[in-house]
Amino acid sequence: MHPSRQCHMIGIQPQELAWVRLLIKLLRHHDPLPPELARQALTYVDQIAESGAVPDGMRPAIRQQQA
Image 1 (cartoon, rainbow, N blue to C red):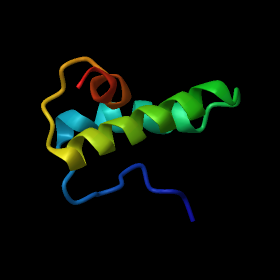
Image 2: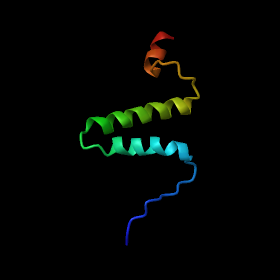
Image 3: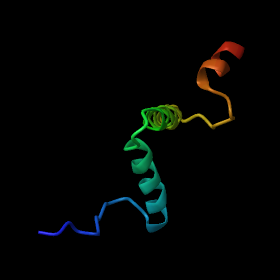
Image 4: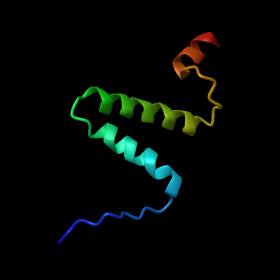
């Protein structure tokens, strides 16, 4: 059996596939640094999305210190 060249995913737009491929490439990288940086970036983006905050270029911890 040959692996399929196509994988259909609900909610992924065709123009987003390049970003998904890049993310997977980073997460599978042989050097441990790129996967960890990608994981931290995803965690940050997830936290911002959950909070509903408008990104202002500042990390949440810094924003809290200034308040």
